Length: 583
Ligand SMILES: Nc1ncnc2c1ncn2[C@@H]1O[C@H](COP(=O)(O)OP(=O)(O)OP(=O)(O)O)[C@@H](O)[C@H]1O
Image 1: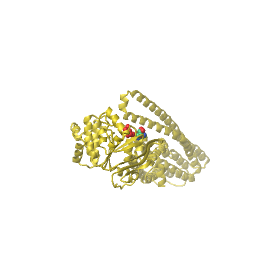
Image 2: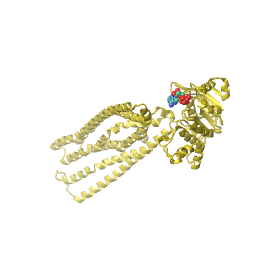
Image 3: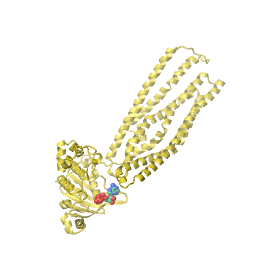
Image 4: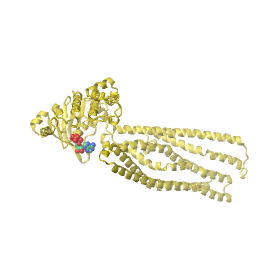
């Protein structure tokens, strides 16, 4: 049974257990809530029995009934407390666990996933979908199950008591249910549309925030706001239509249930006149008819959430089912040579980015990837760290295929310095410490000095304790890169993947960055996407990538004298920017 709920409702095993417990206690609470009716029943039985000609005399006085009232209130309080604990508290705990599990899953997903997905969509799945699931699981799902079971059991009991009045009371329940079930498909489609429109709006807002600089620079505010307005109007139109439809349906179903009371009054009155039921039974059914559908009415109030349940659960399941990169978590490479063997790769099917790429980046050497823009340099560097998996061929680290190594374990051996440095809204010190958690302040300051951070940090208001704003907005490109180099120095991994800063940096920054890099690459396996003549000249090996293929490879001098693509590139670049080589 637990497996069913785990699968159907995307719950953990503990969550499924709590869910069953919650449903059971809600069911008990439904019984608890008819205790007032039972109370009236007992009272009437005793006091009306003699009047309606039934046998019996009055034995208990008012103190007896006060005692029973206190007892019933106590029972209801106890059940409500247990129900609250097992439904609400455990569902919120489950929800927190679900969020953590999703966040953990997202952390493990390969980068290929992030290329295709919109981040606002992911955030809304973690936060919004989860919050609404939490609400549905605590306010609607156990109540729905419990109410249905409760009505069936009460119905059977009443049927044996008086089947005619039971039918008069209960005919409305299946009719109301049928109305809702028949409309489920329309509702479901409608909710899917509303859900998608909502995501559309969030994505547009997120995109606006991400590209605010470009929007302002190109005076695109008007267009952006217009598009947003259109999307909001569209969402609002669908939302209102959905709410209206839902309102009509829910109120129709509630109205049909109320008809049960009308038929009990009419049928009961006729049976009473005909002498087929006594006044007492008639009154009991009248009281029951007024209260018995209350729990199910509560469920109707959350019907929209229930109809949305499938859509949200499917979103969760979709993310949970995404394949992650796995592999061995114990891995010590024999050496730190990186070997590309006939590597083929494409980001999207049909658009080959790398074809039969083979080269070796040897331990202790600098291997420079050069070539025209779009040739596949960054892609190769990222594949070397298993940010993506190759489609064909292999990449080996110390003779081991990296596809067989868990990405986190593998990355322990890599320092990565790419141009798009990501900084956190914390101090310079903490931003560098990301390179190695637990590093002492002294160690951080040592690598910061090596990476030439001292001069710009000394100009900041609080030195290394200065908080640098969201993604380091208060720093220049060159300064950001120096922090990134300091991080890599702190990590001190045996392999360095380096995407050199482009020629857009000023000479002073370039010299300083170069000094930091020289420290970083000493005695490491270095794979560098080279943009500068100096790096190329210092490289032990050059690999020229063009159109995703290795055009040439060898020592810089050999390639220059071979007079091929590389020699051409160097000549061309010497003419335009003396001292630099194309990247
Ligand atoms: N995330 C991605 N999704 C789809 N295609 C991509 C992605 N990243 C790169 N590409 C494509 O892959 C090809 C190779 O890109 P890559 O960034 O590896 O080239 P590069 O040689 O590093 O170029 P540059 O010197 O301009 O940085 C290009 O055609 C590019 O459009």
